[in-house]
Image (cartoon, rainbow over all chains, first blue to last red; front, side):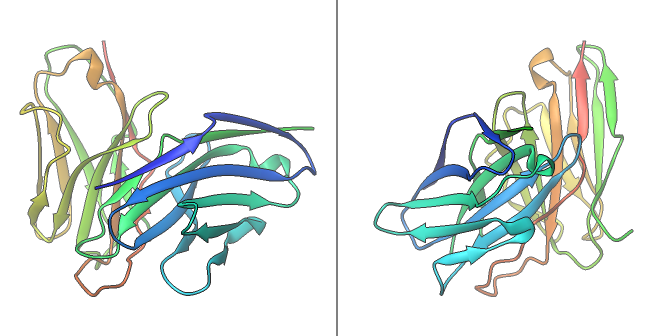
Length: 114
Length: 117
């Protein structure tokens, strides 16, 4: 069984401030971990993913996330928020075996304040 | 087209009517997924296809929901006797698929917004 918990359904940051979106997962096998972004009225787009190897993963638009096995976390960060970062962000986990069924978190809406 | 397409983009129906939602995956993608996104909820997995077969349909919420895929390509999600609680955005995603032991990124369509009055 696998699950994802995203802390905070809404996060507000000032433009230029650090973005930190939290994600904790549960998985009985080594996980694959993802962050997706959904802009208004659009489908989901992959931001970044962790499969194996380096635990600090860099994605598009300056985002990065670090896989911390001891903390079962995969928090998403960006040093400086832009207005264009306003969107909903979903953390997801899949098992490394089988057909990789993906379980999504409930999402975090990021508001960027000018 | 280059991406996953879904039709219609919006569907308004009356309670009790049947609806069909269509998904055209990326050419060559053997895996196809349906999800439901309700307001304030995460993405709820509905069903997974590998080719034309559905090895995992554990997420279908009731027997009013069914899906099929033909020719290893287009998929249709059918909801019979719609209820107001079926109102949501239905998302389709496709991936290369296969059991290669490597993760295959899911590519999402824009979704169909279903409103049941």
